[in-house]
Length: 273
Ligand code: ADP
Image (tube, rainbow, N blue to C red; front, side, top):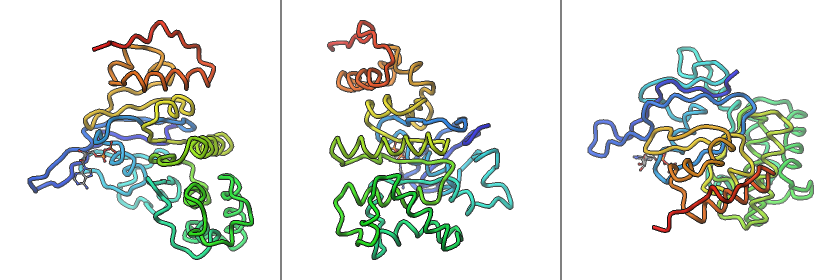
């Protein structure tokens, strides 16, 4: 079964103004349940606009979005339920922390879903543990925490709703390499434990190669390529087509090695021009 499916999905900003811009252009996409998709593409290629359609935050100009087979813009569709099913972690999510304690911040989503007090407590503690926050931090103010810890609190707030589909927009941006590895390893754990579907937007080719099962590459509002990590990244012609430079190709190789996917360095020839 597909977790996420789009049919002819199109989104145009600024319709009827001089600033009209089609950010998603007739995209047909199917993401199967349990996949971990790395979403890549240059700035402005349409990644953020695409993921905001997956939980009903944006309404297509044209076309349809299906979550677990349900057309989320059909008449009578329960979009509140979709927002709980599809957890979206924005870039720099820590800027959205606002409660006086870490506990309350993580509990905000579960409360909105209508969990009982006991379910709220269980989901908060489970989510905190999943992102590596120790119980003593729960009663602190989020503003007393380090940058990396704040990021974890924000991610825990989404995990506490136990989303079947988890979408993250650059969740490791701005963290040091250790913080980055920690966060992504936790995301992978969530994916594996809950058998959930994950979409990870990332500029880091190493992270995508290391963690994703499939790679989705956007270019100019369309899907340029979609396939397994192996299919896409083990072929030099694909790397060239995606437009990766030498440093990014090195990152792909590091990621492939880390996963034990054989790397034939001979195929990665980079044009000196
Ligand atoms: P990405 O996430 O890949 O950087 P975006 O989805 O943010 O791409 O943007 C896709 C295109 O839509 C870009 O050309 C961008 O300038 C444009 N765009 C994004 N948000 C808006 C907006 N609020 N109003 C007008 N144009 C926008």
